[in-house]
Image 1 (cartoon, rainbow, N blue to C red):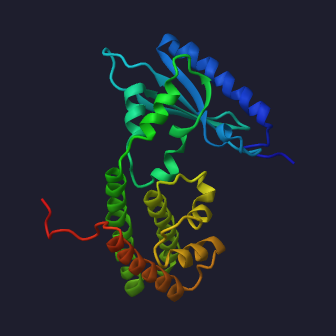
Image 2 (tube, rainbow, N blue to C red):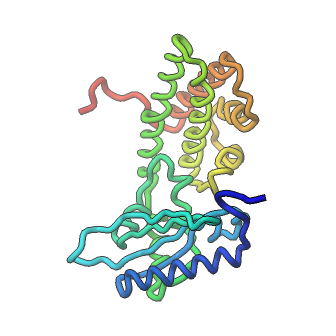
Image 3 (tube, helix red, strand yellow):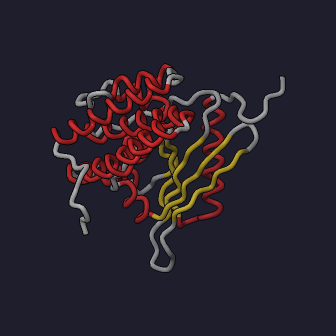
Length: 258
C-alpha cells in the first residue's frame, strides 16, 4: 500500500541524511560555521522509524552582521527535517534563559550529537544551559502560575457557567501539561520528550495536590464528563495555591504592581 507522508527508514539512513544536510550547510555558510549538531530523538538514540531530523547550525559572531536566528524546515517526501540556524550569541542566550516550557525545550542544549565542532562549542553551550540560578527558575514558575494556570482557571469557571462544555477537554489537557512544566521547573528536571512529559512528571517529588488525578484523566482519555473535569481542575488549582504558598511562589501581587 502506498504511504503518504513519513515512511519508515533505518537509523543509519537517517544519520546519512544528517551528514548530507551538514555537507550542504558547509557549502552555504562555509567558514562562518562554528558547529553543527543533531538534537532530539536522533541524538538520544531513541528515534523511531518515522522520526524527523532536528539539527543546530551555529554561526560565528560577526560585528558586521545582525544576530542570526531562523529555521529551515521542510519535508523531503519520506522524511522531514528542521535545521535551526543561530549566531553564537543568540544560542548561548537562549540556552541560559529559563521560561515556562524549559523542562521540555532545553534538553537540546545539554546534549547533542556533534557532526562538526572543531573548537569545542557544544561543551560551552552546555555550560550556558547549566548557568540559570534558583531565582531564574522561581521567576519562571511565578510566570506560569499567573500567565497560564490563573488564566486557565478563569476560563474553566467561565465555561462551567456559560459553556461550551466542549472546551473542557482542551482545558484539562492544558492544566495537566502546564502543571507538569511547573513540577519540572520546581525540580529543575528536563523531560526526555513530549510524549513522556506527563508520565515522567508523575515520577518527580513535590507534586501539587490534585496534579496526579488530572494527569490520570488526560492520560486515560477520560474527558467525557464535564462535571468530572471541572471538579478535577478546581481541585488541582486549590492544590497549586497551597503548593505555591508552601514554596514561596507568587500568584497574587499588589493591585497594580507598577
